[in-house]
Image 1 (cartoon, rainbow, N blue to C red):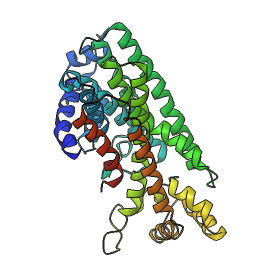
Image 2: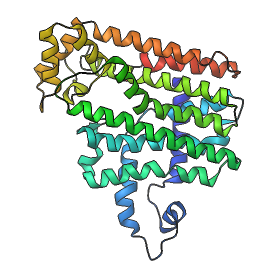
Image 3: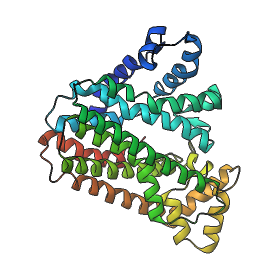
Image 4: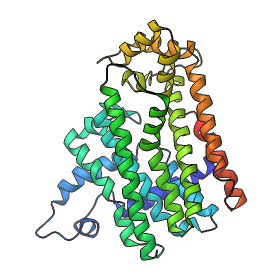
Length: 354
């Protein structure tokens, strides 16, 4: 799957650039947003929308959601190149969500650089992030691959449903972030993750089913695969934050304890609060709800996560969701080599190093 990510990422970025040129002209804005009644301030629009979007896209990112879409299309027996414009939809949506999420979470960094709202201002960031929720609809209306009107409507309805659910997940996470305790059940955490992260994955899976006109059972199986894969990815991502806080010699790295510093609730912290001693649980809540967290306090949290076996527990749960994702592929008639890639991807999202 690493090869697929490397192969498709530049093609996905080229396709995004066809929709959102790095420097948009008057005609570009008119084609995307409609003809102005009077006149667009093109310089202002580039500064407000295009520059921050490409700043973030150019920093990297795995592009795994568009690649997942393309691999599923290929697995269903279709040429993914014909559907490449649709692959940009989950990536553009994801970009919009992380711009807004960073404002809401008070994040200082994104992909190794200052968060977009710190670089361009909160007003610009929120406006640009929200605009990216709607830009992908232009792809559906432009109708590459000549979808039927029924298929187009199904895609519109799916995007509305899944995007609404992402806001359930983010809203839940915001309230937790502002609480002074960690009174969260594992099921509540998993539902938050299924909404906040899982829905963007489900978009990739369901979109592939709709554009290739699959029956409902196939769409459901692909949605289930993508959702469980996404939950496994989220848990794996949280584990990485702990692992990457230490190098092989045990010294703390430059990305030391980012999630802990931001007070993020994870499956590990929930497990540690439930399984630790009363003193450990109280200390975790004290640190994770503090306005500022010192390096030695981050070390303390990581030590508690390790002594309560919470890191290993989270890894076991991630492996369970990866296995569940694979189970959704069992009854699908996919191209065998591509099915192998999709199965391997469920392992990659947990075992990756970054």
